[in-house]
Length: 289
Image (cartoon, rainbow, N blue to C red):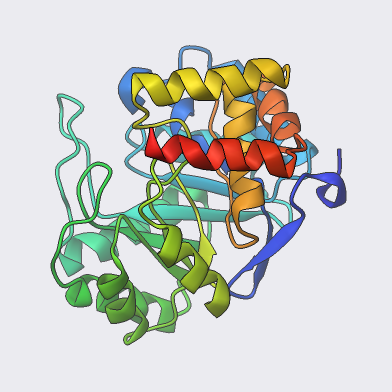
C-alpha cells in the first residue's frame, strides 16, 4: 500500500504534506505508557511497517516511556526517509511512579524540545505540540509564555511547525497572535463532539485537527450503538470510528496507535471503510446517547 492509496489522501500540516492516516507511537511503550515494550522486536517491526505502508506522519513524545518511543523510532527508522514527518508533544514529564506531572515553564519546554531532538537524532522537529489542559479537556488560562518559548525555537530553526493540544478556541487565538498554528490536537470522536464548531473553523483556515482517543469517553449505551453499527457493517468498532473521523472533515488527521503489526494493518484498512449517508447519520446521532 503506497502513500497515494492510503485512505483519506494527504493534508498540509503547515507546509508539510502528510498522510491523513498517521501513526501514534504512545502504545509502543510498556503498560500505562511506562517502561520498555513487552516485545521490542515487534515494536521495531511496527515502526518499519508504518513507513512501508506509506504513512509519513508519526506522533510521539519524549514522555512516552519516558524516552522509550523516541529511542525506538530512532533505532527502527534512522536515517529517516526524506518525506517522513515526526511530530512531538511537550508540556509534561514522568515521575518515578509513572505519573504525568506538568512541566510547562518556558525553560522546561525548551529543554524538552532539545531532548526530543537529541533522542530522535534530528536537527529540527517537523512539529511540536504544546500540551496544555487536563487529561482530556482544556483548562482556562493563558498559554502565551509557553508558546512564545516554542516560537523562539522555531525562529532558531529548531522547529518547523507549531501546534497546540487540549486547548479551547480562545487559547488557539492567543497562540495564533504569537506564531502560526499548524495543528490542534484535542480529544474528539463520534460520542464526544464538543469541538464540532472548532473543527469547521480550523478547516476554513487550513489548520489540521488531530483527534486523540477515537474510542475514549463513550458511555455504555454509546458503545453498544457503535458496536451494533460495526456488526452490521461486518467491521471492527475502531474501523468505524476511524472511517467516520476521515469522513467528518478533510482537515482531520488520524494518529491511531498500536504495538502490533497486524493491528496496524487493520487500522489502516479499517479507516478506508465506506460509510453511506444513512450510516453517517446514524453515527452522528450517537453523540446524543
